[in-house]
Amino acid sequence: SYVDVQAGRVLDALTTLGLAENTVVVVWGDHGFLLGEHAIWGKHCLYERALQSPLMIRYPGLTQPGRASPTIVETVDIFPTLVDLCALPLPAGLDGRSLRPQLTDPAAPSTKPALSFWTGGQRTIRTERWRMIAQEASAPGTPPSVELFDMAADPNEARNLAATEPATVTALLARLPAPFPTKTRRAKP
Image (cartoon, rainbow, N blue to C red; front, side):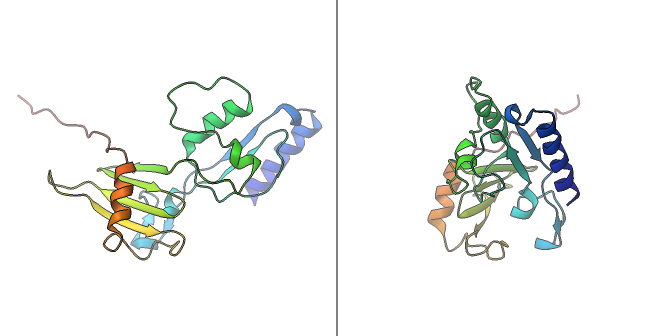
């Protein structure tokens, strides 16, 4: 509620100063924190509650202000959104996409899955329906350890469906980028 009041003060000041019609406002916060879910006390994991972060965008001409969108987006989408809303040329090679479609229609679907990474070869992909977390295998040639959750039926990620949904796991693994290379230490002479 404190942040809501402060954001309201900024928006009121923009209106008072006559700047509301040419200013884009983005409020973006840090990602979540688990308080015992999955036996974790912290935020350094790839489960839904730890990865969600608040994002609010206000721009001149917003047709449905105050309406929330359930669409899956990534923080890499913020920059292309700002470029689009400011009518600037979009640089090539960006991973993110403009969120203008979701700002225009909060029910507009995601245009791509959300990806996240963590240390030790942990990766996750989140689609409208699924979250899959993959932990790279400790031995070469062995498959990764995988958790799969149906976010529509199980938003608390309590039932790992990886064993019963092998086709979904295979399809999502194919869409998940390779892990970042790990640093290797050179042996001391």
